[in-house]
Amino acid sequence: MVATPIKIEKRLTISTAEIATNTTTIRSLDWDRDRFDIEFGLQNGTTYNSYIIQGEKLALVDTSHEKFRQLYLDTLKGLINPADIAYLVVSHTEPDHSGLVKDILQLAPHATVLASKVAIQFLENLIHLPFNRQIVKTGDKIDLGNGHVLEFLNAPNLHWPDTILTFDHATQIIYTCDVFGMHYCSDSNFDDNLKAIEPDYRFYYECLMGPNSRSVLAALKRMDALPEVKMVANGHGPILLHNVNELISRYRQWSEEQSKGEQNVVVAYVSDYGWCDRLSQSVAKGITKTGVAVEMVDIKSADTQEVRELVQHSTGIVMGMPPLSNQEISANISTILASVNEKQFVGMYESYGGDDEPIDTLLTKFLELGLTKGFPPIKVKDTPNETTYQLCEEAGVDLGQLITQSQKVKKRKSLDSELDKAIGRISGGLYIITAQKGDIKGAMLASWVAQASFDPPGFTVAVAKDRAIESLMQVNDSFVLNILEENNYQPLMKHFLKRFPPGADRFAGIDIQTANNGSPILTESLAYLECEVVSRMECSDHWIVYSRITNGRVANPDGLTAVHHRKVGNYY
Ligand code: FEO
Image 1 (tube, helix red, strand yellow):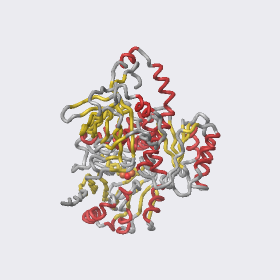
Image 2 (spheres, protein in one colour):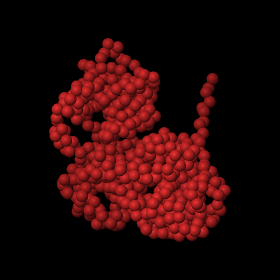
Image 3 (cartoon, helix red, strand yellow):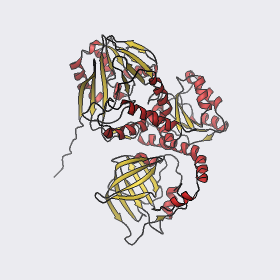
Image 4 (cartoon, protein in one colour):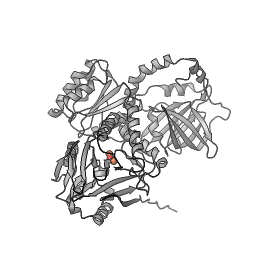
């Protein structure tokens, strides 16, 4: 009998609610979405939140993803006459919020789009229609009547250069789109269950906002000048009502921690060119994983003085290759070249815009000025995919590790005390974790592994935050724990302790088989366990990953597990 493939319909629903006087939300609930952006695995789906503010004039804040076209437009028409929309606030132009901007402008041809300068440029390329527009910046206000005075704040790099926040003085609601959001879909419109949402709130911050922590602090400073914020009408997840101060203050605390390091890297890019945005975000995420702060700068819109100061005070610079002979940016490139010094590190990647400057020429100039190469130049030859983004992230990690290396060695020396010797007596086995997700493969030598439950069988492993494989070990991901054998672990250990360049195949020359869960099994190991990540706990510089064991085999029933003995406890 031939089995009929089961087509699983993804659940898309809409919820609407009056959240304050004259203020209604339309929330598009995407229950089953499991991927987002740069390797961003989702456990709890997501939502795309849009808002109607009804003063004497009517404003719509953001729209929805195009997959909700029919549902969203029908719902909107049930609430208002779209032709009455006087203003369409576009907080940010990624398609999950702006996917229906063109549809709205067709229904409301007289509406004026309110957005940042960068967002208007993006929109022109996106919708190819003439439209009324008004560029807004920090401090600008629009009066809708009935007390609804909208005040705008620029929030560049949270997480795109185009982002604005909008504060309504009547309701004291701030509309923040991606900022203070989370990928969490539930029937509840508000944050009434803090415990349930906080892991997703944290994970979202880490993926999208952490790499831009200094920009987050700058935006929070602008928000401090506003009257009290009573509600955060975000673009993803439950709206913040019950925990406004707590959840805003977490952004402050995390961003301060993230940016307090003395070392920082400037990631210079051209926001509306090629795939510069996404590639830059991936490199930035990798750098941030190592504890080095990142400063994103759009070299097309930043002023020369700002660029000079940022570059002069940085430890490193990463550049996405800009388009050839573009006068708008050539001044800033000259400024960068004139501001760097020989103590700095440099990294470069192609933006795949089709008209990139030759990558080697500019890199050579930096190297001639005495800078150290942070990672081999990344040459993107095709439309970037998950592997490209992973490669960029690994390059960022390499650069960050290079920067922090000398500091770590110094710290190790200064801590070589009796306490460290005592901690060093904690022993562990020797293991290699292997994982594969799509085309991306990873491997890591591990020793901090401990069984943690009988039923279901489970164990924990500690993974340093700057390990590339960490992004393949999110909740629901699967991997293999390869257990190494006493007297037979040296070749594997030596191989996986090697430093691999970004994107290198870690399994070249190693015998592997494929496990049921798709990850590689090392044939030379004593035993292997197939595992699925259940939960993660953040512990300072490591993640403790608890996983359920789904399958396993021993290759040599008489073999013993290799044991890792250490002298001191302040490194592995
Ligand atoms: Fe939710 Fe950056 O879009």
